Length: 377
View 1 (cartoon, helix red, strand yellow):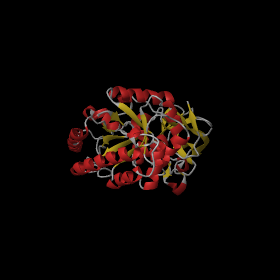
View 2 (cartoon, one colour; view 1 turned 30 degrees about the vertical axis):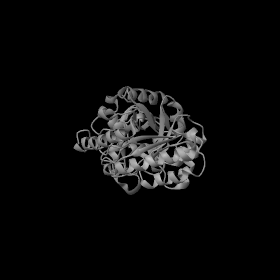
View 3 (cartoon, rainbow, N blue to C red; view 1 turned 90 degrees about the horizontal axis):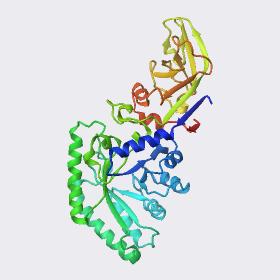
């Protein structure tokens, strides 16, 4: 195989247990949206059977999990639903829902009278604590509490005695700056959510909540609550720019590996690739690797970006092509046709490659193209 992504399930399980140990009083909702950050959702969900639940972004992702019967654990829709028909299907399938718009509560109230739903309902009321993306503002909390009380009463009436406790409500929020732990916005967010949470419990009694993504789980134990929602850290990537995954005890799950498919000898002054953007300053040896932007490598990776070839660090030269790229291996004598190379993963952190590309590791992993074979190890 000239290019493939290796998925290390032992590393995945190790990362899960490492994170669970950092939040020993919390249950873990493993985030597997975007095809498990490019790692293959079926592989990841099967490997993480010990998780307490799984979170996805959209209804379509949850349906994939449900149709494949990958798990009996709760499946949470982090974006909720956008219309009544989507809500109806989510109810029929028993998904847990993030609720962040008044309209969603109204749709639930209307659907309560439509028929008897097959299973209890779990709602995650999302409150905005500074992200200004999804969620009710803290000033709306009293209004939302009133609407939830009405919804619960209507649900119990229309669904019958057997569903008397059919709606479980939890609270959630999301940090905007948890990957920068020293920023004051994090403390502000905690204070906002704490006020909502305290008042909610005064009205509804003990309530479970979730606030921590990967970065907050690792840096803000005071905000772990009953549930934590690790995403990128599960896959062995540090959520912090100044702290490596290795220092956090995390191991890379994906290794994107290729092979040398050609070798070229260049005289000083010759160029490589489209646009002739790199010119040899000496007699050089260049390896051509299988892998390009059609596989998910950023086309804007510059000359000098790192790659691992035949057990050594080397530098990309010239523009990334659709299916190939070039690497300067002048000083690596052992490189030969068929020599192994790694774009990221073992030997070369995805975070470092992402920095060279001016992006984040999330984007590298999620951009992996469907044509790249995945091998589970």
